[in-house]
Structure formats: structure tokens, C-alpha cells
Length: 297
Image (cartoon, rainbow, N blue to C red; front, top):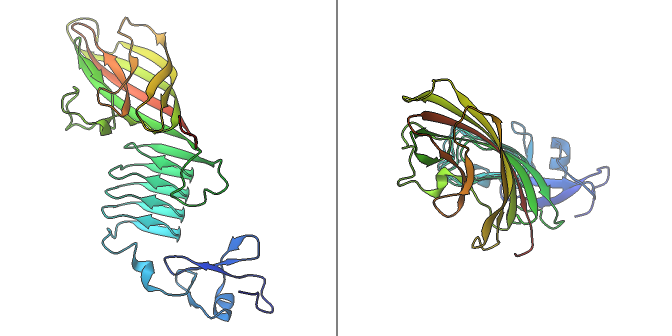
């Protein structure tokens, strides 16, 4: 479509929601009411949107909880998304997501993941309670939410567990009181998710705090820092910890935690080993940078 006389922008495309996206010939933009109507479209004064048809704008509200709010362009929330705000462009929740916030473009919260904050571009939250900042993509053609190769992000994830005596338990993401501390019957969703075709570099801070037991004194604690990286092949079949180093910062003679791959394939955790007659609460903060490439390895 050509520019109308006296106007510096013109319609470029119509989104699946019926909104009309305009362009100045270089950049995408939005039209005011005068411009919108000049090109023969309708204008929603309440939302400030120029639209070609209005019915599909209800698509994101049908069968969805009315406790969520979606603003911006081409955002989508799937069934089971509740108490969640999505704002920006081409973001998506994949369903059964609660109490979360997405700000930015081309971001995703995976199915069943809740209590997240996702910002930036091309980020994907795979863990409960994850704070995830997306750093974009290297591919110039990756302008849709499906094209997720060659991206990187930084995440902050909290984990915890308890050991009674000499137990060796895997730390869990966002553990709640109704989950057993041991590994029995736990699935991979309790651990940090591996991402295919990526290097995941981690910095992990650990506090091991004694809260009971017949040996030692309640309130005694150890402090650790673990650094390293985890490599996962494109087909997820090839994975390994390429390096892991534990530094003991405060020494109260409690056993060192060791980073380990999950007792169930597909996750990453901190293996926490207790000491005889000592009960320990483990508090774990994980900073994870994920570098996902477009090549196969």
C-alpha cells in the first residue's frame, strides 16, 4: 500500500489479533485515530489500537483465567495461565503458569512453570521461581518466537534441601513443604533444566546451616562457592560437567557440597552430603548463564 497524501506512515501488516501495524518505510509504528481511519480501518479508543477486525482480539481471553493481563502486540497465553502479566511483543506462556511476569519480546515461560519473572528478548524460563534475563539472538532472521537458535540468557534460581545425619540429598528448585527431602520418586522438574545445544556456566553460593543433631552446635554454618560449566549436546544425549570447582569460604567442618548431574537424566542439581549426628539446612543461590548455539554438536 502506498502512503496517503499528507501521512508519513502506512499500513504494513495485520496481526492475528486484528491489529494493524504501520511503518514509516523503515521502522514499525502505531497509528493514531486520524491516521487509522484515513486508511479505512477502525480505531479502539479505549485500548488505543487500530484494527482491521476485532473478534480475534478475544482469542487470548477465551478459556483463559480473567486474573491475567495481556498488553502489547502478538502476545499469547495458553490455558491454565493465572495471575500473570504479559507485556511487550510476541511473548508466550505455554499453559499452567501462575503468578508470573513477562516484560520484553520473544520470551517464553514453559508449561507448568510458575512464580517467574522474565525480561529482555528471547529468554525462556524453564524453572520454578526463575528470574530470567534474555540477551537476544545472533541470527538476523530470528524475528519470531519459534526461531530460538543462537540465544543467550542469565538466570537466577534458588534451591534448597535438608540432610539428617549422613544423608546425601539433591537440592531442589523452589522446594515446598509437601515434598520429601530425599530423592525418592522425584522427577526432573525439581532440578535446574538442561537446555539442548548449550553451554550453561554457573556460579553457585551455598550456606549449610546446622539446625539440630547431637553433635556440634545449632547455628554453626559453612559457606561455599561452586563455579563451573555444563555442556549439553543438541540431541541432549551428550552432556557433561566440563569443570566444577568448590571453594570453602567459611569452615565449620561440615561436608562440602559437590555439583552433580541429576539423579534423573535431564537436570542439574547440587548434591548435599551431611555429617553424622548433624542436621543441616542447605540454602543455595544459582546464577546460570546459558549460551545456546545454532550449530549441532
